[in-house]
Length: 153
Image 1 (tube, rainbow, N blue to C red):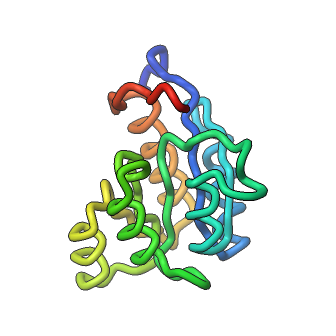
Image 2: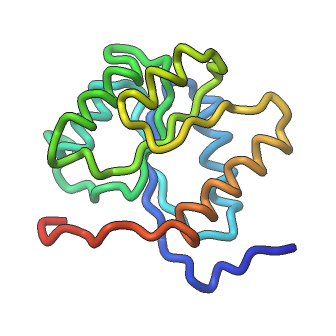
């Protein structure tokens, strides 16, 4: 059964991923999605927070609809980024999808304790990975009903 995307909208993702191969794969899967997406990418936790706060070279960037956050990152790891985001009143309402290779219960528990909106483990099989990214883009682009955008955005 094919999902209708007649109610879809452009979904802006911020991909926070230090592994170039993983980032390229995620971006390609999102480009092939039936949902219109735009992906910005940063490769470490410090740059993720600078992007989200629109600091420096990111001052003209648009606020993402969803953050795709890897846990194993340089400078600040994904858990730290998530905790900082959810403690910041200007960032806490941005949905965060942890997209990681870690299937450990400790990482899942810690992510949800820091208010992650979803925790997805990257499948090793390419077709399953592609399906996961497609389903995720349909969820955020068609099914999810976001809060109204702020006037400042």
